[in-house]
Length: 483
Image (tube, rainbow, N blue to C red; front, top):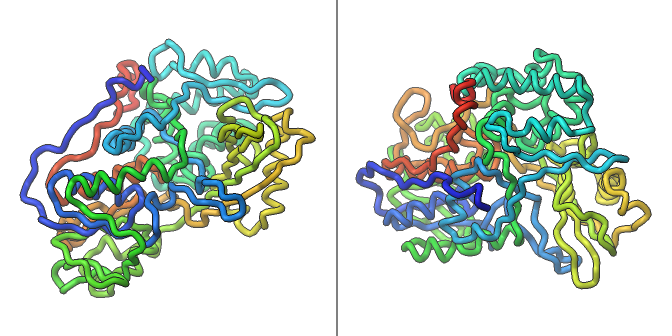
């Protein structure tokens, strides 16, 4: 897409002496990002992954019922995901991403509303399409504009002051009607942060709107993989090996070896993997099981791992015998199911739709039959062509620990990639942390995961490896979004 041309790309600078070898625990996006950058820099890097495939939670599996390759959940990226885009370019899979300027919002019995960037400069680039949306009244649109203006003027420093409070509290201060919260704010926030407005930190939700919607007209462009997610990461193994590294699948880490002063490697079910440095790129609860009490006492970053909460996501794959959805995706405002994505039609004319429910705690105890019933009700509400058509299969995929919970106050316990010896962050200098739950400056996203890997590699190498964020447009910057 031409509008993506010119996205910033920088290499790390100011390198200092680095370890000769490193072990990365975890073959998810964070671990792969760290390993690739380390291997490229000449560090002899070994990736240890318990599973027999790469990608972590953002991957695919072969359904034993049908033999189909299904994604665990639908993952999307945006134009503002500069580090994720850089990672895909390094893997050579950027052409596997299909970009969309338009986002469709269901509004039965009317045709779906459409949001798309227009010709006005940011932050006014959505003005024309938003004004034309029929799902909100004129008064409700004015309420949304009032809250957007408040977020714009707060800037980054202002939103930081809201970190201990919920986004719901911010919306209340901006006098947002309940219907607007249900049909506009909640679908965006729960999809981006995996928590609803009354649970999520106001700072994280504000960041979604400030950087994803208001700052730059390229930022809200939505990218969706044209291939199963696992195929995006297939090239990672070859890329790491080509750079001199190694990927070991099916190897389970059992402990991080620590001699009282430094980590010396990783203990696994296949023995000890020694290294000059270790990158732990696993979820907080998994990391806690790898750390001895002695290691925890030596590094304050590890002392609050048990306080990192989680939030689930539910993906539901529904196959219909005929084509029932013409649009590539659809937001379902005010419904239990937040998004629908078409997954293409087969030769027999059948069509698969991937339904997504984020912040899905209330769904986790439901059986597949009840999940299917609720999702079908939402699909038929949104898609007239699906009414009266019985699906040929329904497959639900529960990710009970899909993301960390970015609740108010979480930033206080969010650990840095490297230990800097301060009282806050402790002092095991050759242990590095990665994962979207670490201090990336982003909510729980694939962009956050890649950023964490780049931050860990950069901390180890003494370089700046993050790709710069999209620069705010001149008007948006002048109005305060970057303040």
